[in-house]
Image 1 (cartoon, helix red, strand yellow):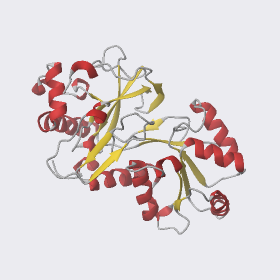
Image 2: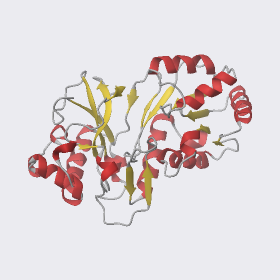
Image 3: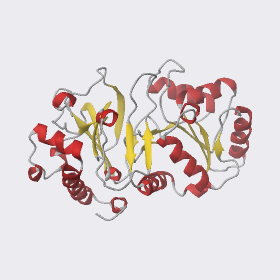
Image 4: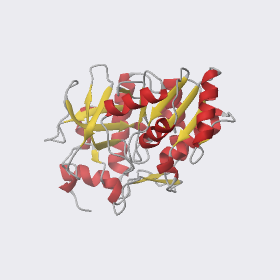
Length: 325
């Protein structure tokens, strides 16, 4: 497969074809995934549609090297996790694929990056090494080429002034932030923004009490004076992101897809409209694993949008005990 060819996908049949092609490639090249498939007794050649593809439990990114490439590792992304918890490691052998993914993904939903001033409020991510989110946002900030674009860690007064001024000047502005930091900001200042996108990346990171999405978005809408809160759905183990422009309803770029699995039978994919475990196909993960069973619970709608409803209470997804490597 040619480098970055997955970003040329624009039709469902193309997605299906490339998914099967990448599955068969990873089933051979990825040692951990190959062993997982063998434990399940999967005949690789019998997998002829995406619903038959087994999804690797995301926990294996904590315990194994998930890699489908023989190239040297260019970048290792680490999940945040809590103290004492083993972080996930995503070994990236071609960082340009990630850069293409988030750039093309952003432009797919929002248009040219150069049109925006990008302000980032990501304290918990900046305080650690190896964040894929910080890597993405830092690059988007540079590509925006606006003097106000940047990370705002301990300069909330400057952030307030820039946000207010840019909005009054009708400049396209994106404020992307972790939930607790956005709440801290609206508790200190009051805004009435009309030309600014507020995007939350989720998570209180132990800084505040966890809130349900409706409650969080209501507080942020009132605090910023906006009608909708946008959201980003991504994780260390993925090289692509889905976005929501309001109401917690997410859409994927053409090279990414969500399937919903039965919570009692991890190999059973449920029809649209049902709730269950979120499986992600991320074709940008061509050099690691493109088929991941996450710990998130969600619902896939008939228009292929999806919602995130919560997380599994148990620490291990069913199926992880199939193999001990």
